[in-house]
Length: 152
Image (cartoon, rainbow, N blue to C red; front, side, top):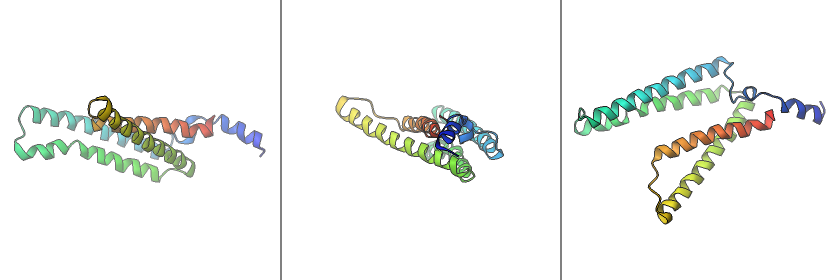
């Protein structure tokens, strides 16, 4: 295959064929189902924990396990994601590796920049949940940027 034809064929690969939005495989569908269940569990436990603590239903040291309860579904989400990564083919893993690296580097830059803004420009302290949100958004952007090499 000549360079021109391989470039042309790569240019028209759809985004989902590079593993970015691929829900055609059973592994992908399973991961999406598990993700939704974990996120739903996180939402329910978060609202329940906040309501229980704020209304005074949870006394003393019991606040610690109640406050950590929403973390359990997120741990299960991490396990599901790692299982999903282990089932990907080589191209999809390469794309994920680039996206994760992009998210890690971008999140580190964001946190360092915010620290300087906090200390020198009077910005409010960073809530760590926002750093996690930034990392998730950068992972999604990194997926698209990494997959562009294969679809256009």
